[in-house]
Image (tube, rainbow, N blue to C red; front, side, top):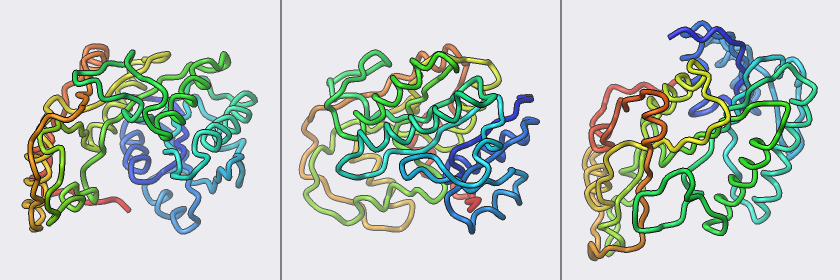
Length: 282
């Protein structure tokens, strides 16, 4: 895959670092931001030009203008868990846009989440997003709207479902717990390797001005998934009180698969649980 663009990633953590390393393999020049000084040499070791950038909530740090001297900016900053999350996250991204307006950036890819969807007891597509689902969801929707309405750039938003892979072991979440509810609820997950490849495919295919859901094809029940996830890492499986059908949602990623001609590396998250050869980069 050839993607000969200069790309800036804000920020280079659990997802951003392997994404940057993959983009370099695709002939990209990559600039990566972190707020942790100790991570600067790690980024440099992977061939990423490192920058110390913060958002508190205004954007600041060392050489912000040079960091944004790129064709593409990937914004990968999840909303922080705080009482004013909607206003705070909006101020963070609005501050980024102020710098972008005076930069060479032409395109933005925003990493969003399927937390923007209510539980409608059916498959949900991109048009089903709604406010008042959760404060995090509201923050993401407000920022998506801000970015998509910015005339100086073209923006694509990718709404990832639950992230798994490498050091994110879902089996730890409920291991050993008893009388858990909602055992029959379908789960929505995506492996990090798929996240990285989907973003690369969007850049390669120049799919801008779009909103995409990104979630594995298969949706096992909560009981099936978390029981197996605990067993795989040697922990006591959780016990569920019942498997009654509670309000649920199934993330529909058909638009993404069709537009990008994409086949998931891990179409069933149950299979991803058994991948024991993953080596974390950080």
